[in-house]
Length: 490
Ligand SMILES: [Zn+2]
Image 1 (tube, rainbow, N blue to C red):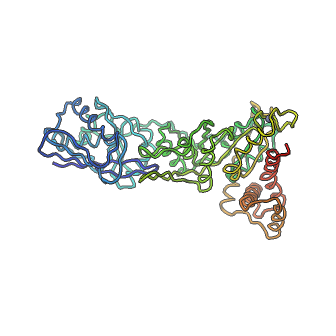
Image 2: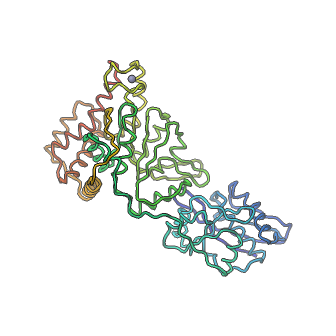
Image 3: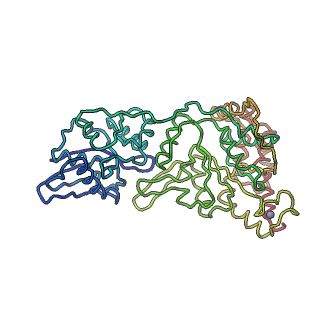
């Protein structure tokens, strides 16, 4: 006897279709697993046998071989339990299957036959649809993720007994609605509105939102840097349906709760973050790190010089390419990482340097070391550096009816549709401004990109000298101060 069931094995944001073949032959009773099963999958045998006994079925009288195909690909996780159990019941002629052979059936079995949720159900479901499966069957704990999945039959069932009834055509399997949908994202911007009397900061945040520019905030402790980062997130245009589905799939892989409010991700890891915490891991089908979880949103690194050097170095390639690959041996996962970086730091270890040298208790070598930690990997990729004054302007009350969201959305659309052009005369002028400052090609590109965001905000099709000057200020002013603060003459 021979039975075939289907499932999938996670590979980052995708999943590999897996065929679970079960065969019974004469021989000593027992179950053998072949096909590069990982540890959790090998333990399936014990869980499945326990669940079969608990549900009143007998253990097969012959030799059962379970083959997970394709054999050369490693398979991880406990999600194959359900398919293996169905296969064993079928080859031992204990059930009469009428439905489900072309479905992906996934779920971990508890010893009492209950089905426990699997990680990454949304990703698995999308892969099943892509592979042409008829439907997907999951444990109830994955119902919320299944609600995000369209274009394929889907169902959830609580335990092995119900799944058997379903496969024999006796019951249906639906998906109860669990998700609190809030389709229209909040159009309020309380954090932004509460930044009172700081028009320069408000404007800088708007520019950063339009062009997705990476930002470094420098200011004394408690000066509202975290507030500014959160305000920036508020004024970013909401996620499109496609972007949201990507973001939810990544959260599903991380085992994080799903919410559907159109808001962009905001990740603010502590400076004790490790490199695997940042980049994610390859094992067990891949778990996303902070970079992938920030995809389509903001990554806020507060106290950025305190982060581990390896973590800061690891930002380099993702910032450049919007994606990165983890690989080890034959394993390889490509993670998306199109995020906007907001870094924040004190100007010196004591935090008072911007108020004047006399207020600062730090010795010059301390300051140099502190600022030096940032140079290179992060500073090179920052588009604007903002000096955040110590201000008490964050108000509890909000300005009513701020049109900032509309302005940012319109400017962003304009920028994508028809990027503002730089005429040759002004291009030469800009080169003149930048010559001698040791400006790299990268810095020149930053200034032009910032000016383009400014022009888009002003609804102009051509860059003006005024916009270039403002862009130079945003990109260069503090960079120069930064360099002089870390220079020897302090
Ligand atoms: Zn200091």
